Length: 271
Ligand SMILES: [Zn+2]
Ligand SMILES: [Zn+2]
Image (spheres, rainbow, N blue to C red):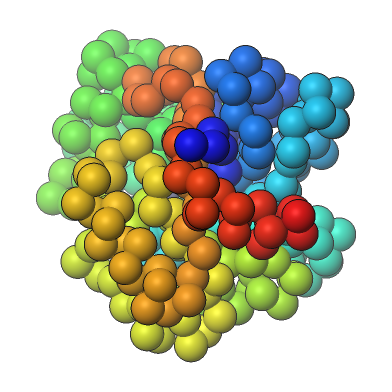
């Protein structure tokens, strides 16, 4: 087994730790290859890279892109050229769309009689603002008791603060990653099994599949490995770590069986 973590978040999006802290925690957990994959921003990547270099931990620059086709249909871009201006403009536009969505969410929640302002939410976000910050603001005001409850009571479909995702189409997400010289990997396929469309995504340039993910069962992982073989996708893995105060999984690193880890290292590090 080989321990990797190619999917983590810092406070540059909805994580609660700095890029340095996340890298350090990953190294402490015995991770051998690490990626910071914040939502719609690469601003934390250089700091994470430096922290990894200091500890001889292999590092891969990454980003996670949301799509408009499902709240959890996300794509990871690895080894993108961070200086590609067109890609940075694309991320900037995504962040603007996010901001508009969050404003709409806040105004719907406020209109329902809950005391919530933009200031309550934006003061909690360092960089990329997300629904997690809305949930955190509701928690801070003691309207809910956790980030999860905030989502459940206000932010999911059917609740007063639900606004459809402001992301791009899947094809656009994949194409933008490829145009910036990156590898496109589908994140947490187990969360969106009802919308799988591998033939079309492969056609658009999909390279990999996040098979090894904490909530994926053994059976699901076997099914995903079969799909990966069928469409010639490399298997990756990550914890989706969001930091110690995010109310979700708080351990870093996932185990990747050896033949898959070898291919992953070749793909991401040219090793
Ligand atoms: Zn995601
Ligand atoms: Zn994520």
